[in-house]
Every structure is written in C-alpha cells, then in structure tokens.
Image (cartoon, rainbow over all chains, first blue to last red; front, side, top):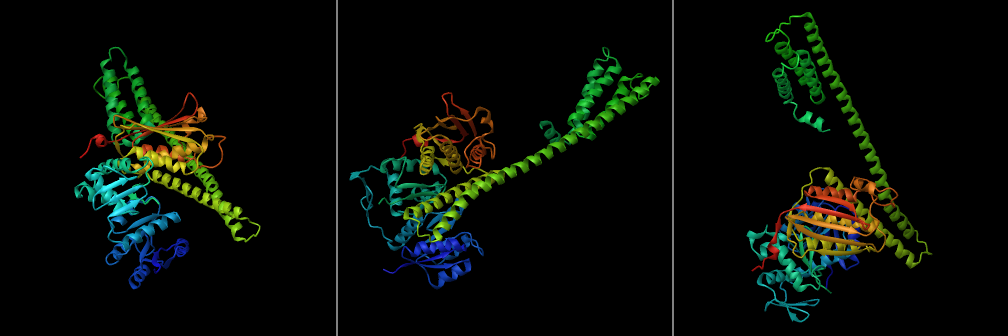
Length: 228
Length: 360
C-alpha cells in the first residue's frame, strides 16, 4: 500500500517540523505550505490524501481556505486551532472539516484523528456488523449486544447509537446530532441530547460516569471511540 | 465612595435638588417661626448649605447659598415679604451669612477635590503595586518551567555519554512536566484577561452536572494527585442551563487548589445538589483549612497565603470568584469546625426536569 500523503498548511516553523517528524515516522508522506495561497496551489496540483489546516494563517482566514478547499476537495481535512475557541471549531466542522485538534495537542491524539479520518474515507460503506470492545452492533438487524447480551434500546437511543457507530472516531457536533436524530427543528433543544446521551451511556458503558465509548468533546459535541 | 458616585450620576439633578432641599427646610422653618427666631433660622439654613456642600458640586452649592440668603431675607428678616432690611444689624448679618455660606461651599469643595486626587493617586499606586506583583509572580512562575526545559534540552543535546537511559528518560519527563505547567499558567492568564476585559458573557446551554463533575475530577486525577476525591451527587439533579466551560474551570481550580495545598491522602469531598433553581456545589476537605484572618483575601487577585509553598500565581481562586460571579452566582469559603476548608458555589439557573420524564 502506498503511503498516505498529508499536506500541512501552517505558518509556524516549529509546528511544521514537529508534525513532519511525527507523521513521517508513522509512515505518512508529508508536504507543507506556509501560506493559504501556497496551500491552495499545492492542494490543487497534487491532491493529497488528507490536509491538516491551521486556522490562523498569515495571508488569509483559515475558514475561507477551508471553504475554498471544500468546493472541490473531498478527502479529509483536519483543523488546527488555538486553545478554547469552540465557536471557531464548530464553525469549521460545519464548513466541512472532518475533525479538529487544539494546540497544544498530544501526538497520540493527532495520530488517532488522522487514522479515524483516513479510515472513514477509505471505507465508504460500513459493514453491517461491528464489534467494538465488549459491544456488538448489527446495523442490518438493529441489534446491539453488550458482553453477548442484547441491550434494549428505545428507537431514539438506537438511532443515536447507530449514528455514533457509523462515525466511529469522529467528532459529532451537538447541532449535527440533534438534526440527524430529532430533526432540523430541534437543533437548539440540547436538553434532549443530554438526556439521551446519559441514558445511552447507562446502557452501553461499563461505568456511565467514566464513559469509554461516548466521550464528551467539551463545548463541541461527542465522539464515539473504539476500545481496543 | 457612595457619595462620590451619587455626585457623578446626578449632576444635572443637583441644581433641582439644591433648590428643593432649601425650599423644604425654609418651609419647615417658616411653619415653626412662632417658636424659633429668624436668627436661628439663619443657622439652620447655614447647616443645610454646609450639608449640601459635602455632597454636591460647587455650582449647585453656590446656588443653594444665594437662594437661602434671599429666602432668609424675604421671608424671615423683618419686614417680611420684602427684600428690604430695616435694621443695620440685620444688614450686617445678611452680608455675613452670604459670605460664610459661600466660603463654606468653596472650602468644602476644595477639600473634596483634594480627597479625590488623593484617592486617584492611591489607586494608581495600587495598580503599580499589583503590576509589580504580577511581574514578580509571573517571571517566577514562567521562568521556572522555562529554565527546566532549557537545562534539560542542553543536557540531552550535549551528547554526554555518561547520561544513562534512565537519566534521559527523567530529563524528558521534566520537560513534559514543565510544558504542562506553562500551559496551565497561560490558561490562567488568558482566563484572567477574559475576566478583566469586562466583556465576559456566559454561553448558557443545558448541562448535565453529573458529567461536568466526573469529567473534572478525572482531569484532576490525571495529575496523579495523592488526595482521595469522593463524589456525591443528588440523583434527582435536573439539567441546568449554564456555561459548562466556565463551571468546569471553576471546579477544576477549586479542586486543583485543594490538591496542591493539602497534605497527601487528604480526603476531598465534592457534593452537588439543587434547590429552587439554584445549583449548589460544595467542595470540602479535611486538611488544615485557611488561616482565619486570611479567609477574606483568598479570592483576591494575586493573593497568596503567607508562609505558603512556592508555585502558583494567586490567580486560580480569583478566577473561581470571577467566573462564578460572571455566571450570576456566588462562592463562599469557610473553615469547617472539624478542620479543613469548605467552598460553597451557588449558581441560579434555569432547570429542566426532562431528565426525569419517562420519554418516548
């Protein structure tokens, strides 16, 4: 298999360097751009398998770059953002970013995000039977099992759960979940989400207070993790 | 201070108020003119003008002085209801009244201006002092981890062959620890400047308090603390519409403070409950508590307890207070009778009992 090519668009030399070392030592082919203009040209001339885009670029707002890329670029884009700027992150995710990382980030986190995003773009059709830790889901028959025993989920709980399973490893925003599960009229009814997340955790997590599958991304949404 | 602010807000009403007060006092004097003589009335009016001078600006006070002199002349000095003065003694009295009232007004005004200047000067000095404290505390708090990082990397880059694998591992671990410390300090500073900007607005959304508490405790426990944190949350707790990020920061800082400054193996209890749309979180420990005479200063910016260990900028608890108040709540600190500190955080917020309905 060919190495997956990743384009990094970031003007900070140190971040560039660290990302390059981290990614190359994990078998990715890395190229970089330090300005928005350069990044757009590079992405267009040699479309990479993935783009890591810093929102704070010197010549143009990262959100604009993201929008321009999304006009034609379909592979995953991961956003780099400075600390606790949740609105920025949500905006980027709504504009088609696949995931985000907040500086300072941990290497393990970076690699997990990249793996999840690349896996997603490789396998477009999810196989109907999914095993994750002590959970088993058969999406064709709408059956969820924990430790081999059937977990009784209500219709809404199941819809929510299936959405998570199909998007394993990926952050799902509050608005996205509310829209997908309850409908567009509910995107501001976050209390429903809170209640159902709590209920779902009680049914599928070993300890609902220390969730390992459905983890909270503070201020942004939730992420379904694989337990391996 | 209250008087000063009164002065600032009502500047346009001061003329009106001066006239009103003099009018009321004169009317009262006139009504009792059978009991008190007109010379006593002069004293009463003079006192009134002096009192007005303590609160109002110079021009309204001068207006009050002149008006009261005219009223005294017109209504009280015989012959009544005319500005004429019959005796020479009364003419001198009237003249002296005017002079005393005006001098009084001017002098009081000058004293107040000097006081105001003194307060401003003191405030300025305090700001400079605060700034110096900040610089001292910051340069220490930032330099220590920076020095660690520089020294550790120097060691690693020098290619010293006598460094064992264990040494190298420890040097890298020190770099990691120092970086986290720097990050924490920067976060505190950013939060502080968010508060200082005065524009901080809570972003309220439905929040599961249970989740916030468990997540925050987990983050604290990741710092490998030796304290035992136990959680007790009322299962009937509704959802609250509050700023989750701010609440997390408040809880994190209180817990972090408890873990930094209590002895190893101290028990820390965190309890959450609600009553009548008020969310209440109590965090207490069985450590030594705070010195009684310093309790009231603990939430002050850059305040650090006397004889405390180094480290910390004195920002953590002031952020707790700032964020709690920005959310419309309040935080209280007391020492428990059995020993140890108790923080009580109360935040009023909209609640939703949707959680308890059997849905679908």
